Image (cartoon, rainbow, N blue to C red; front, side, top):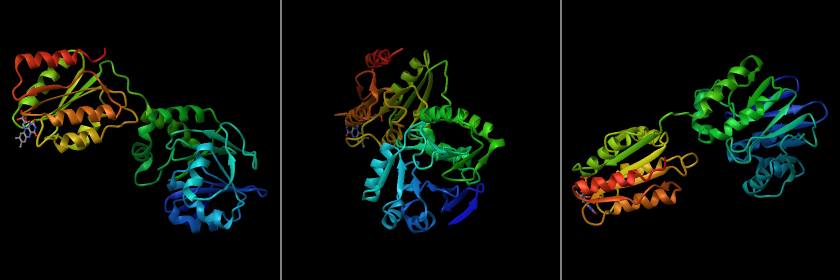
Length: 352
Ligand SMILES: Cc1cc2nc3c(=O)[nH]c(=O)nc-3n(C[C@H](O)[C@H](O)[C@H](O)COP(=O)(O)O)c2cc1C
């Protein structure tokens, strides 16, 4: 554990890279944030004399260590959002002296501290706290001065919830802030705040495209599924930016990044030993279901006897919450002119 001053009333304690902040105004002592379970003892020592703990989230990485403190100080007031309180009791496995945090409201024990709900940044129960121009931002704005940096941390943790990040930025930019104290990494001071908010606005900004993007991923040995994929790509190129990807020859990361950048998804798979190949399954496993739920899709492929691979991928995408544009196009061995016509008919089912 290391400790250093943010100002004369606020001290930062860092436990293996996780920051907590003790506010001591000479009257009330409040610990903002908590730690993973493995740092529970050190945290209890640092927070032992506090009057209250504010949990910005119940995510175990920033909360599970509370159990040790609660054992020593069952009376300590714990502030969190309603969902945060429900979750933390299940995580530490005992009752706590709980206090609900409301959006835009002040802390009942320390009225100089106010709360702002920032749900899904990165957990649904997340709040930010503000005290005397200092924003305690949790994972948002984390990573400065670390190996990952601000952008690396944002991309690995928060980008999946970018819509919620945008909402949080809008809410927090209306508050008078001079310093940002995040859950990880260095504090950011007044002269860096405009560019901090601007960077986050850019990273989380919605992509505006004039032309929608169709991504066609296929797996084929003897070329029959490839022919369907090529025909689909050519046809879609009339209306879409169309990207054709051979699943056997393209790195998994690239495939997944293309899928998650797509507006419509086509998966072409042959069937091998009653299954689709693992390259196709890996692509399916990489779909970002937070942002891509509801994306329209079509499955197609060539088969020899039962075509189980096509059926498995089709039903899996549907049960993941993607929207089937048309029935799968299943072709026995080599595609005929009629099969290609059926494929085109299925492509016409994608909504405008
Ligand atoms: C090793 C092997 C196993 C296969 N297993 C199946 C199977 O379980 N079910 C099926 O319908 N077709 C099966 N097939 C047939 C292929 O799916 C069929 O030949 C298809 O046309 C290949 O398409 P492609 O040219 O895109 O590779 C198998 C083919 C091979 C080579």
